[in-house]
Amino acid sequence: MVTESQLTSETPWISVNPRTLQTAYEDVFALGDVAAVKLPGGLFLPKAGTFAELEGLVVAKNISSKVHGMKATAAYDGTGYCYAELGPRRAAQIKGEFFAEPSPSVTLEDASQEGFEKKERFEKERLERWF
Image (cartoon, rainbow, N blue to C red; front, side):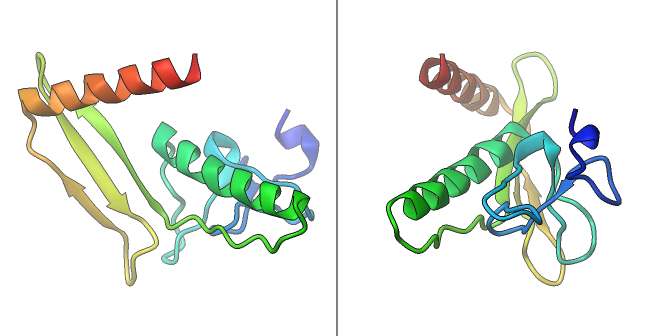
C-alpha cells in the first residue's frame, strides 16, 4: 500500500522532514515504520515503537496548531529507546540520541532483573493507555 501511494522514493519508506515528519506533500505526514527519517550521517532512524510514539506526538501537536490557526512549532528531537531481553528475566534499555553530531549517541545499560521489570512496566503502561 505504501509503495503504491507514490509517496516513496529511493527507499520502500516515505521520505520525511526529520523534525516535523512532513512528507513532500503539504499537510501529509508519515511516522513510525513507514517513515524514512534520514539522519545527519546518511543512515536512517531505527524502527522501534517509542520512535513512532514520540513522532506521533509531534505530528499531533503540529496538526492541532494548524487547525487552531497557530504556527506549527513542535519538532522531533531524534531520541528514542527500546528494551532488549537478554536472558531469563533480564533486560537492558538501549537509548539513542540519533540527531547528535557528528554521529548518533547510543547507550546500552547492563542487563538486569531491574531492567526486565522496567520493560514490563513500560509494556503494561502502553497496553493500559492504548487499549
